[in-house]
Amino acid sequence: MAQPATTPFQAAADSLDPTDWNAVRQMGHRMLDDMVDMLAGLREAPVWQPMPADKRQALRSGDVPTAPGDLGAVYQDFQTLVQPYGSGNIHPRFVGWVQGGGNPVGMLAELLTAATNPNLGGRDHAPIEVERQVIRWAAQMLGFPQDASGVLVTGTSMANLIAVLVARTRALGTAVRQEGLQGQPLVAYTSVEAHNCVARAMDMAGLGSQALRLIGLDAQHRMDMDVLQATIARDRAAGLQPFMVIGSAGTVDTGAVDDLVAISALTRAQGLWFHVDAAFGALAMLSPAQRHLVAGLSEADSVAFDFHKWAQVPYDAGCILVRDAALHASTFATQPAYLQRSARGLAGNHPWPTDFGPDLSRGFRALKVWMTLKTYGTDKLGQVVAGNCALAQQLAQRVRADASLELLAPVTLNVVCFRVLADVPDLDAFNADVVADVQESGVAVPSTTRVDGKMAIRVAFVNHRTREEDLDLLLGAIRQAADHRT
Figure 1 (cartoon, one colour):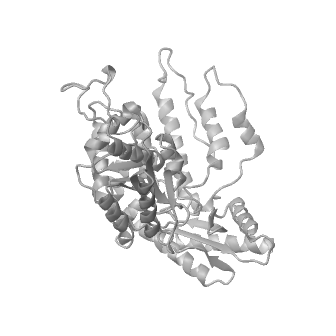
Figure 2 (spheres, rainbow, N blue to C red):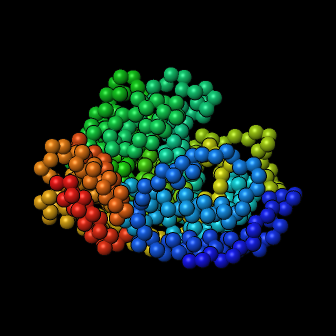
Figure 3 (cartoon, rainbow, N blue to C red):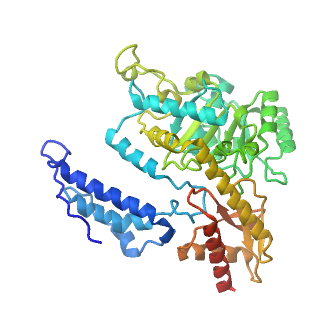
């Protein structure tokens, strides 16, 4: 298809604005039309395709541009070098990792965000009120009190770090910000299936990853409560200071949900901070069919989750909620002279978002969340959650009914772990090759993990575009790849 003619972009002599705004308008319309066409045609496109060596080299070579270039040519480079070779997470048959598919309203919100370009570190302007409303909505969605605090961050990795730091302040007081740990032997507890970012948070908080006790699992792949209690007692007897338990609502490997009700009771009885890593599982609260699976989530002291997963907001849009707003602020708030607050003027409207996290320069993540929630509503997003979980149960049922397949873990939410059985010397390597073959075919993208030491094909349903016909195509591709290798 011939592209419409555009006026060459030329910057003004005294700024980066164009000499002809119509040139920007034409190019913007062309880009928007192309992106809408791309989204509308996703189902017919390959999920993923390897990047050719010459195109990869084009992005690895060349010096930094010093002279002006043509915007049309730059966009052509995007179309040929970048757009066709993404990871494919927007595609309905991307089921390998827990990544959301985005949505067209969020895409448009990003355009508005970039045009207005606000910094949400602080000060008195409407975008901060939008984020505050999003945080209040998040608290309502998860059953937190309306005076809970929160902040939007890059993702649950950063949100978990914030939670560890707030819990550290609760355990040692605000003096820890100036004096450090002073040898205090703090220890925390989580499941062996917890995301690695929890251990990294302990590392970055100065506590050390060895201060995180990894607790074994019960038959449902949940943190074993008897082992947890025994480990806490043993640490106390050894003179250590337990301060935090991190439950998982949707583990990365199998989608398991810890017994959050039991963890809440234990932490209250023992005076420990109860945090939940609910990167995608938190949004199960929006689905009546799945809400009971995350019972106890609303009792946590803090919850970390991502709007860019099951809420389908474009990347990135993570969130941390903290029940005790004062403690949250005491962990981060500072007021150097250049951040002085005032009762009037642009320096008012405090506390500011920077008082609840490490970032001062912050983008307007809240707008795409706000517009997504206002346009679709939580009932619709809950239907997406329920639909994904129903597909997971359908896949599990089909795996159980097929003698050539083996289910490797219980299916709690949206993640199914199984393997192909075959008479081959190395079944683990065989299944890993089958997954790579399916990925390279462009038909679907599953991934691999290990469950009880066995190589598993992991299928995670997260995308709002995925339908039963995509499940058929996925299983067909897996069987074809397995047959070809045997």
